[in-house]
Image (tube, rainbow, N blue to C red; front, side):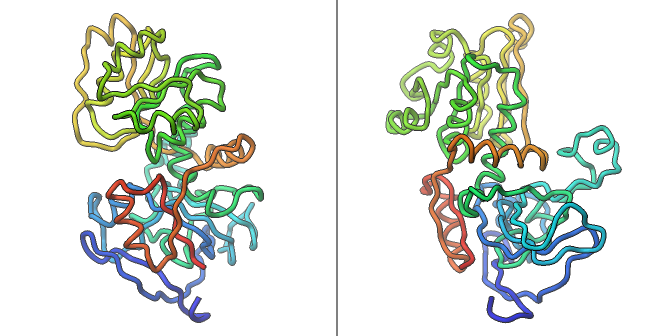
Length: 339
């Protein structure tokens, strides 16, 4: 950091515009901790801030895949200590008292802000985070490797972990990209028979290396028929954005199967009520996971050698990293480093 009283940060100042700035160092308020950020992933959801997809009060520091060391704890914080390495994901920390929190549903807390949206995120050397949203980072995961697991990893791991699928069942991962390349690895390590689906034949070899037993080229094959030829999928993890991809996957489900949609898109999903009723099929959405699920994601990843494919850039090149991610050229996750 340039001085003891300020720190560097990259903030969105208008639609599509990121710029480097210096911010004053402040103490964490009650219930919060201050982190010295070591790495922060660059996620497609950062476009909510940078491109103003969600209501944003600029300037705002994006970034919800942040890993760093606690260097100060605010009043009333328990269970966390200075020097501990932690992660901060998309969910900024539950309130503990709303109707959803009281029912144990921390993901849908009514008073939970989104990291990098309602408050500054991890494109910075310093970050203030609510202690109820912190995720513990295992010693055997580097900060760079842990960062993308806080969103892309947590989302795919939690969706599969909470699905009705059992070991030995057929699971399809639609889209071998930023989310899907992790989803394939998790599905294989969880003991499922794994089908990877993507457009074109160029990712077939990669999918097999990641752990897929089968590959379907959606540009040359009917996805539903191909899945049914394999016995039908119990679960399809639809990581690719778009309602058409979700609708295409439904036809590949076995009776009682479910499609879990992870891609944020306003494209409608057109489904046959006949299929839903007579085959008892389901379509669900999954938004990230709880801090406890984040802890489990990182532990499982370390134990099972699940790793994101990463490109790193220093903080001062955040705009370049963001543009590379948004263009689809990144293979597959961009991570900013602070040193």
